[in-house]
Length: 112
Image 1 (cartoon, rainbow, N blue to C red):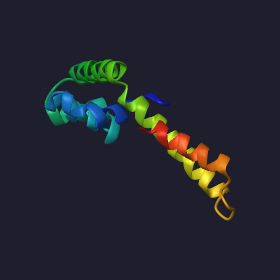
Image 2: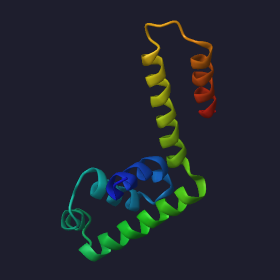
Image 3: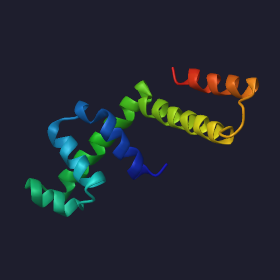
Image 4: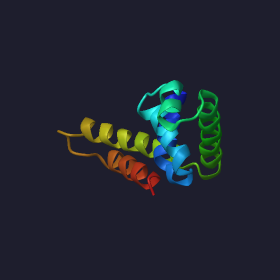
């Protein structure tokens, strides 16, 4: 997964664990696509300070994810749901066989 997307997702999940300033700067950089210069100007700080805040906050988010694994669980659940939908679509106009029903049940249990 591209780092920019990964950090954006982590910011959505764990953003409230950052300081307001860290969250705002990460949001501006990763979600609003502002440059370091634009963020520095908006916050009356240097580009280097912006870079430092981004790196510190990014590392904090990564550290939290390594401990809690919420993003990993969410992404895995999305894959399971996609598989369930695919199986249901394949079975749409057929009578579901017992094996198909068991497969769908197993996939749904993975979400728990």
